[in-house]
Image (cartoon, rainbow, N blue to C red; front, side):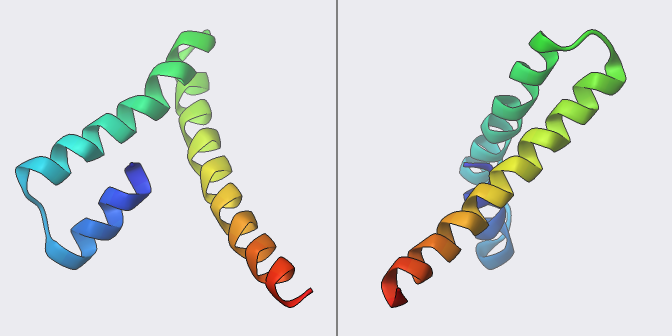
Length: 71
């Protein structure tokens, strides 16, 4: 939801629905990292780790799709 809402914001701009989905996506990343960490820096590190891990999974899925398509 987080990445999809960011793409929609770039294309169409902010509105109430997109802002709500964006907030839900951010909370979906923050809450698990806040529950499993012991300090403020671990919360921030966990948030960015989950964000980058999701981005890498998307890129890996795209490469896997094209690899299976041509391989």
